[in-house]
Length: 118
Image: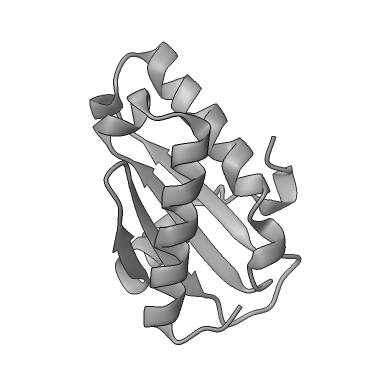
């Protein structure tokens, strides 16, 4: 489970990261990253799993998998990083290892575009 202090909860944080951040696309995920000006407790990670992914059961399963995968990436992120992970419909069929691989690839691409070093 992703610890509460690393979760993005405010709509304004989601909106700023998606609109001002750098986007990286993978087959099952879209990842938006942004380096926040204020260095806080640690990186903040938000999930967007829309109804296009599937039923409520499928969406919650995808959310649980993504939270678990995101937890393993916390140490690789800068404390000021903001990350929004948007699940695409194909993610409901993806296993956790595939989601982790896609998330790592997308983060690497987005952070390199952003000019941020890990």
